[in-house]
Length: 188
Image: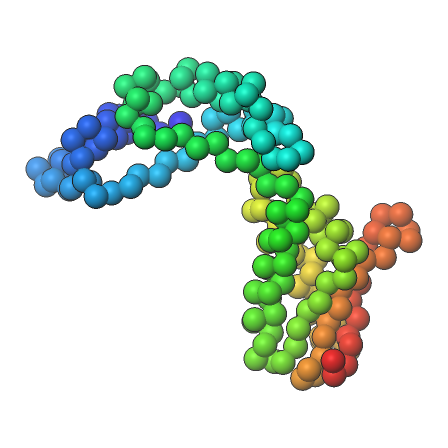
């Protein structure tokens, strides 16, 4: 939706003929190519129109469809084989991504024979702090780097973690606001 209108004319040529010719007369074959295009058009309807089970309401689907038809020319939309509406990430999805990010961090720490473990309270705190339904998981990685990896690095430097040690990240919510803390568990 952000592209210049001429881009759609080029895409129409690709979608119609399965090929494109550049300004120097060279032809590129697109016959065995799958084009994946993304758009944020209608995303606000998807955010608002999803139920607890992750299903998109028919009202949201219709609103997205109407907005697509208002923005794109019919000849462009008619050449698309399929339009897929992605559901926003849920907190359960974000929790799974937190697990993947910690596993990745632990792979990087493996050469030092160290690992990070998150308590359930810490995971909940991270999910709540790093979850943004509008931006999805993008802010989560930065949140983990800033709040978990930095905290673990400070604990390693301050407490002299050694081979086989585990850096346990916990959340103390006794103050009402919650805060992450790190402790070294030696030789686990």
